[in-house]
Amino acid sequence: MICLIVSYAGLVSPFSGTIYYPALTQISQDFNVSVSLVNLTVTVYMIFQALSPSFWGPLSDLVGRRPVYIGTLTVLVGICIGLAKAPSYTALIVLRMFHAFGASSTIALGAGVISDFSTPAERGGYFSIFGSCQMISTTVGPVLGGVLSEELTWRWVFWILLIMGAVGLILVFFFVPETLRSLVGNGSGYANPTPSQWIKRRIANKKTGPQPSAPTTSKGPRKFPNFLEPFIFLRYPDVIIGMAINGCFTAVMYCFMTTTPTYFSSIYGLNELQVGLCYLPFGVGCFVGSSVSGRLLNKDFRTIALKQGITPDEIKKSGKLALDFPIYRARLRSCWISMILGELVTIVYGWTLCAETHLAVPIILQFLGGISSTPIFNCIQTLMADLFPGRGATITASANLVRCIFGAIATSTIQPGIDSVGLGWMFTIIGLILTITICLVPVLIKCGPRWRKNRVEQHQHREARKQRNNENNSSNPQTATTIEQ
Image (cartoon, rainbow, N blue to C red):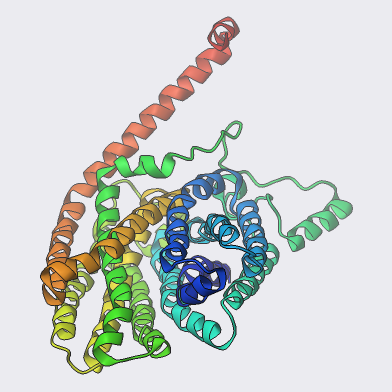
């Protein structure tokens, strides 16, 4: 239930971007501004969408998921009302900044919640559900946005987003408990309660007296959240390689989506609504690929665990992975199949458009592109959550930052590249770039365990040194006073 609710809430971020695209022309006419200025609202949204999770992720890893979830969704609902009634272009662009600031939190928070309650043995399946909802929204959004803009007005785009955000806020408020393990341990702790948890606690207190809280893993006073942590994660070689793989295939997805309106209209003579419908096969492919990859991730994990003499039930019971467990091989064992399929589809897709083949051919290739892309995203996202337990929201913020950067590069360079070398050769070059990412997988499998071990040992040494310093300071008050001064 928790997975389905946070997956629904995760729809808000990508949906807020894609449903807006068909309304750009109407907004330009209503506010009497150029299309370039209206496109600036898209650019601003993408910038804040990339940076905002770097704020919300570390904050939720410290104070809990529920306060940040409820706060950001409340802001989102209020901003949608303002956008639906925006009186001027200036108001629109300012509100879109705050819109991205609230909406983009849902993906990082959802990933954090799933990494909290799921064990490595089952995490791949949950992340596949979460990822499939995000991918579907990127294809359904333009269709719904086109219908709303054509049949009603562009302002209804934000009324729909208001309804979606309000439903997500109600579901999270009433049904999603606090999952941050440093606050609630295995889930039996009491922190940031839902209304039903609060009522049960009050009734129990009246009957038997104050209830003791379950032990948690928190140590000492809370620190101020480090909002640079998502950027700091990128200094680790295994993280940057994984993010680069993820970013490259995200860039390919943006190349598919941004070239579809232009070339499907010019080659096949489709109108805006028909072009919007052409996004659906890609979305269906994403859903199918994500569903299959979830089962495959769990199957690969069980296979590797059994080879190590460990039953998945043992890992599920402990919820932890040993430092010598080959987690890179477990997560990336079947990833190369999707990567090779994605490379071939990308190259063939460009030449089919160049040759102006029947419309069914590029649509089928987009379906296969969706099938090949989501397993890669799920593999990398699940691997990152495994490597940084308790930091699911922060590491997802890092991934979001890299994805947005690669996506922005793709959308800004794809058309100039096509104009320079042609449609077929441009997608061939992109396909050859994907070959490099395929070669990075064996590097990650071979060198990743050593990088992970070094990172964990360095962290343990720092914590031990910090603990010794604290013990020395507490045993020598005069020294502690001098240090404080």
